[in-house]
Every structure is written in structure tokens, then in C-alpha cells.
Length: 146
Image (cartoon, rainbow, N blue to C red; front, side, top):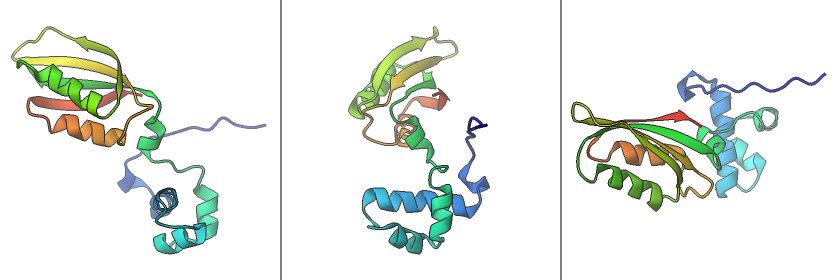
């Protein structure tokens, strides 16, 4: 009897180092920095058996989010052009906006929820979120669902 797999999102610092090394070995292979599994495992200091044991079970968060609809919740200062600046970031990075919801601003702040499809995203989701967070007038930005 086959069981359905369960998935968890875990902060990288809480993982055993072998999982992080497997993820790094997979990255080396996908970017061409390592031509073979043997080379990738040597560079990351893990055995090939450990790599093969965990390779299908370890997936960086940004890879899981590729091609999915992700919902972002933003707390923005109520300033002219603020939402336009955020939407430009989505556009530049090729995130396809599906919905935008905003609550009437109170106390100089607005809560905005944006759902975007990430199939053609040109950077990892974490980079999109980072770019939003460093934009002037953004108080808080997080992934709500995805």
C-alpha cells in the first residue's frame, strides 16, 4: 500500500546538513558547475549514495513555487504611486498578476493582496519578495499562500 507523501516547509538552519548538501549538489548539476553526480558530490562533500537517497526528496522552496499561483500580502504606506511601483516589479520580473485586492487605507497604511502566476518568473520567488521589501514605502511583504 503506497502512502501519499507529506511536505513541510522548514527553515534551512533546522535541516541536517546532508539535505543542504544534496540541494547544493543538485544546483551545481543544474547550472553546469558540475558535469557529473560524482563531481557534484565531491564538491559538496557528500557520498553519491546520500545524493541518490535524497535527491528526489529535497527541493528548494523557490523551485516548488515555480509555475504556481502565489498570493502576496503587502502593508504599504498610503502614498501616490506606491501600488504602481509594486506592480512594475511584478511586470519587470514576468510575474503574471491574477488578482489585486486592497482595503481602504487607514492610519496612512494600506493592506494589498496580490495573486500572481509565476510560470515565467525570471528570478526565484525569494528575489521577487526581496525586491518588493526593499521598495520605499513597503512596511511589510510576505507570501500568504502558494
